[in-house]
Image 1 (cartoon, rainbow, N blue to C red):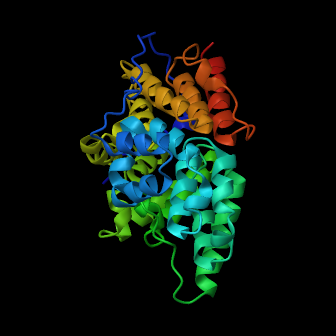
Image 2: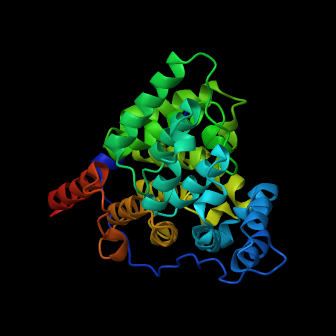
Length: 341
């Protein structure tokens, strides 16, 4: 049986002040030998067709986590009209911008006529937006989008999401829709419902593509930790780390929730040593990627782990306004601290 300990709402453990060891950002260099380096050279030469052809042929390599910031800047320089008529490329470009905190750039791709006129592409854009709750999509909006996607898929026999290059786990089948819904519910403070959704999903879909997704396992670990389900939290975090590290995805927001999960579990167990390092690593990645909601969650997690004075920059509010879960976490910590006085 999976072990269960108290969830976040019932505790707050003061910890010792530890040195923060934030992750170092990826190298700013882009050697010619890398796909991103060649892409940037073609962009600098204004060889738009060559740049797009390279992106199509080397899409996975282009998404190298260490050079994602360079890819974003290079892609911003490419005129959208050179690729916007290709639905898959429009969706991929929009998602790249969305997951770097650039909603206007993303909207310009997602709202292109080629996407809006295609029901499957339109549903895919909605699903991708719904997954961006760490960045620019409010939890309430995400749930509305997910309801619409579900309705569109149910009412249109045979319609599936458009497989989007580089973001296949989010657009293959429908399982990632449940992950997006669980995260949105958790951010609303409905941790129990979120935990139930992911427990059912992972236990009932052994061969699903979502089982190879760092983001999915990391989200599961974080939500399980919030729910106090330490056994599942540890198992999911271990899986997320094992999937992430070989390809460098441990340096991205995808793994940040698993880091927060490990910090929460350590604090639950009265083992605060190192928790600030885990949270600081997550906050560094979140801030660098413009994922300000995730950064707020990092700040609240630091508070819950006894480091209220740490990560002050990560505590900055996102443009989406208050996050109910963050308010709940900090309120629980204040209540617990007052009870101990």
